Image (cartoon, rainbow over all chains, first blue to last red; front, side, top):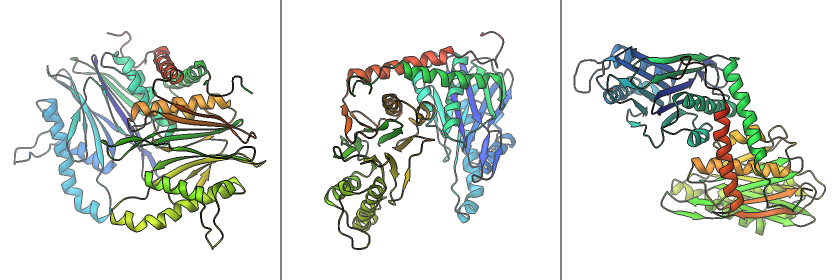
Length: 250
Length: 250
């Protein structure tokens, strides 16, 4: 299982991804799911992946080496895409290319071709963007009304995002809420686990401001988990007793 | 969609269910999903349902009218079952009986036979029980280590239960946390909605202590939602800023 979340706020972009992969419950490994394609001063791009690991690795390799155009155009590498929209199209094309290559083998093995990607960043003076790209290579763009996108095991961590993240939210508050969302997911699904990779890009900086891996036992994240648990306990204790029962507790 | 949660704590049993049903997004209705089978002083039983409405209604009707035994035993009604375990077996048998009746029609229409039930209560001096009964009629029993069970759209509302409910939790605190869990689910999935039915049975009382429907606009539930949102906002604000970025916010 996987959980990745991207948040696009006024000040910039945050992306967070866990690293746990499994082929069955008895074969669990750590693989990086958050990747960067940067040309400092020119472009900053982040890509987080969920789904079949062989597919996402092939997609990443194609994006590094170059993807053929749909109609015989020359290969283009992700770092050469002129706009974020065209870069997202290129990622979609890479997914379709991998599907063409793997289709027969996947069908023969009765495997489902499953991949989803968060792709975000900024090129030059263009607007910063965040996209969710599906298995078919189509994609949606994050909007200010709901300034986050998720892939993988997304439900456990969605309630806190729904309540706490707005377009105006401070960049590091967005990171903090994203980490709380990741914590909620890790507690409810053991298939999502540490270490956690995270990246932050401030709007118009065209460089990664943060590129960090949270390892097990890191004090800030440990403290965040403890504080969040304590605050939730305090929060529901502060809500009055439901008035539906007998007048006094027995 | 549906969300139902049952919590079995030291002091008793709480069950909460929404009432929204839909056949497609353009055909939404209100149906009761939380049902009681009570003989005050002798037994108290609650049953909450998720899945295909025609199946759950047929299962309930069979349980009221009586289900035939597996090997020609006479029909038994749910209120006649001698123990909670045998009552849960009877519910499972009712599901299998409905499947036998509907199988051909469901297959012809390419419909999936989908139902899950929360079933809990107490009979006489027997222990109080809470079961989750699956489409196949098999079931699991709630244990003290994780004193709650959920059916339907369960992920959004699970993190708060994971953190806040223990076997020692007060009965009305369990109800309160269950309502917070319902609130989180309703915010993230519009297929789960008001009114909400809830029931509380205190251990060894053999009677429903609460049997209540929360309608839209009810002040306690409205207040709970507001307080919970405010507490969550305060909680994440109280967590220190992540130390991963530049030393000072830009």
